[in-house]
Amino acid sequence: MKIGDLTELAFRNLREAMLRNSLTTLGVGVGVASLVAMLSLGVGLQQFASKRLATSGLFNAIFVYSQADMQEFRGPRRASSTPASPASRPLDESARRDLAHLPNVTEVYPQIRFMTEVRFADSPYPTSVAGVPDSARSDGAFDGMQGRFFSSSEAGEAILQSDFAKELSDKPATLIGKDLILRYAERQALDSADAAHGSSRAKGDSADSGFSVVPHERQLRIIGIVDTEPEGGFGGFGRSRVFIPLQVAQQLSATDVSDLRQLVNGSSSGRAYSSLTVRVKSPGDVENAEDAIKGMGFATFSLLDTTKNLRLFFTVIDLLLGIFGSLALAVATLGIVNTLVMAILERRREIGVFKALGADDRDVKQLFFAEAGVMGLVGGIGGVFLGWLIGRALTFGTNVYLSRQNLPAVDISAVPLWLAVGAIVFAVVVSLIAGLYPASRAARLNPVEALRYE
Image 1: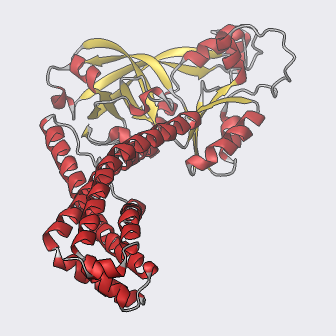
Image 2: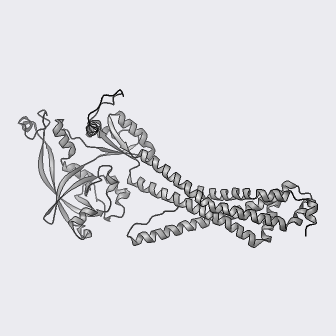
Image 3: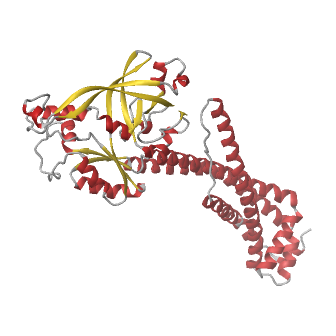
């Protein structure tokens, strides 16, 4: 039998019992809708988490430290048979330039964070200050902040963390546009004459390797207030409460922890950074860049392992949501079996005539398979649309709740093309499987007995 004739017969038979077949198709649609709605939530939440982390720059960032600093943190090294790591290098400006020339590296900037005192309204407030690179302008950490981002990389401006802003004023929003005074200890290199007399010189330094600490002040304009700590403590400007442009922070040349360590160890007075942040083009470049940095004698840290665990977590979530969503579709298959079995009882005489005219068992099976497939196809298409509507409704309800809590809107549901096509194909396959028994039963009917059936 030709495919066209088979399809025409299938649609004609489905139209004869319109109500029953429509209810069965609706059952398939509801099953597919539950499956699509469940999986769309998993996909949407995964895309939301990935987007937020990607915009924060954590996925394509490598945090670089000096091997010597890491060894001091870990404690004395014990005797070991493992191969020795490459010779440790100071994390200075030369190292920064070398790291910037690595393949696929887009940016290298230092961690600049120091303790200081802020004076506002003639009152002192001890706090910590961090330099923020201009590339953080597009990071998700500053989305929804009050005020604005820095006007330029050299602007004398400051962004306050919300908790610190509440310490300065009962109405933090009124701080925007006002000035504060930053008091800090500036590091100044000594000339040869001063160093020869040992003025504020690091112990064990040569005549040209000392530095002095001089108190300074800098007036800054408050331009914004951010609720969350940018990058949550990674990348050199988290865990601080006042944020200034990175270039301004470098110009201040404020003393920090690395300077104190340098003073105690009697090392060179050349400026060394406590850590550097290396950004690459994409998360896929992190592993190769990290290996290259380690080969240069530096210690590294990245969120590569965390991203793998995140993908595993969402894969398990999608699997569980898919299983629960498939239960409704499994119930719908019983409706297909019931509908087709009832069709056999009602159409026994028609099947007998069909066989008497020359149709064989295979043609009868194909006819019932076609009817089951049509119900699966129509139910699958309708179910995908219904599942998309459910996802949109859930997103709308969630955003209404978030708006009442003064939180930004999110998109928690997504139906990509692969999910829509996969759900329709899955519905058709399940429907064909449900039609196996009715089709086999119809094919086994004796045409003589079928013609005598009243």
